[in-house]
Amino acid sequence: MTVGVLALQGNYEKHLEKLESLDCPAVLIKYPNQLSQVDGLVLPGGESTCMTLLMEKTGFHTAVSKFAKEKPIFGTCAGLVLMASESNDSRIASLNLIDVTVDRNGYGRQVHSGIHPVELKLNGHTISESSMFIRAPKITRIGGNVEIIGKMGMDPVAVRQDHHLASCFHPEMSQDSNIYSLFLEMIHSHCLANAV
Amino acid sequence: MAKGSFEVKVGLAEMLKGGVIMDVMNTEQAQIAEDSGAVAVMALERIPALIRKEGGISRMSDPEMIREIQKKVSIPVMAKVRIGHFAEAQILEALEVDFIDESEVLTPADEANHIWKHDFKIPFVCGCRNLGEALRRIGEGAALIRTKGEAGSGNIVEAVRHMRMVTSSIKKLTTMGQDELMAEAKEMGAPFSLVQQVAKLGKLPVPNFAAGGVATPADASLMMQLGAQTVFVGSGIFMSEEPAPRAKAIVEAVTYADDPEKLANISSGLKKAMKGLDISEIPEDQLLQERGW
Image (tube, rainbow over all chains, first blue to last red; front, top):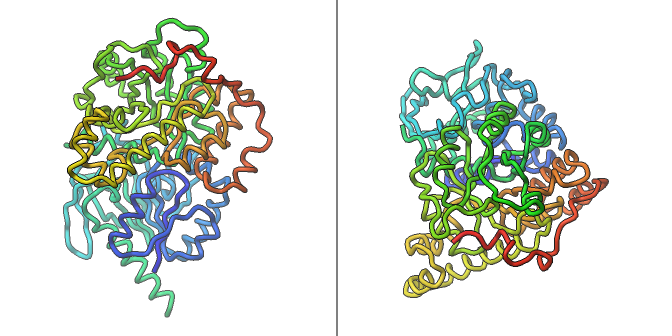
């Protein structure tokens, strides 16, 4: 099982290090044809306007949409913005993978960025993790088929729909890795289901 | 809770990796930068090439102009303060800019001291010419380091020199024994604990970007291949003949810095780059890189 990390812009190296620290083979993805080598894909944090431009220019928008039909994707911060079905910014070309509405930088400018406790609901257990929010997007609407995986206070900050997962925060900047374990489980069970 | 901690400051620097930060002088340029894929804009009243040409004292930008740019774009907005001018930095913090550049491009306000950057919630970026200077700035609280290069020259030679100085000094530290590090710290004028940390990590404890003289996609590629994680472009875009296509090309060149075939296409058909200066044409007392201590 190999996981790809989209490496057009943003914090892709830290995701790679995190996956490798979990003994998961991982590769940086810079060209659409590399997607055939991986079983799951991480869309990292960075600037969603920049990533949208590069994804459209390089053919990734179409390639990732196609990949998503068959394989799991995990988006963090800007990655969530790209996966959300709706955002407050019409320039973002949505991949339309999770039925939520997001407000880009909804938690404010950098002076409001911080590390906050997030309650994660994983396999019936609730775990509290310290999570980093950087000019983070805010989820303002949750669609009917979306499961809330993580909450900060009353706010949903991690969500799942079918085989896709997304968070407002940056798990790659945290000491913990519970949400990666969930994503790897999702890839594993998806591979098994498809093999049958 | 835990807002403005050092980790959170470095966090934003991490998100800017693999991108281009563009100098802009008004809202129209800021919009062009954002539409071209910039990961952040640096709002300043005069880009370095104009400062060089017009002379005079260069100060922090008018807050009104910074506010207008903040309203116009959704990407992070950075702004510069004079070296040591903590009051300008306090004003930028009140404006909620996303990053402060304590910059040699503006006229220094203090000839001995830089700002104590740990006092601020907003992250700072500072320029350096060598590892000692980089570690002094990190010691004062900088969350991001960039080469100084020679701003407004359109000449990459100084940025290359500074990047090579930093990386070769880091390599040297990793080969030294514990007993040699104190003498080395003394020699480079750097805090001992940071020298120990770099010797162990084999890299800076904060991201390391390139700035000062980037004018073409090839320049951006060169700096990325020499170890920069993102590129600042000052005068190189808006002093060129056709800024938007050049801005887009430099953004793509950073992502595909190690793909010469792609770079050949990216670099094709761009109108004239900024003219640029040979460093020997710049009088020594006008070299911006000499500022900072």
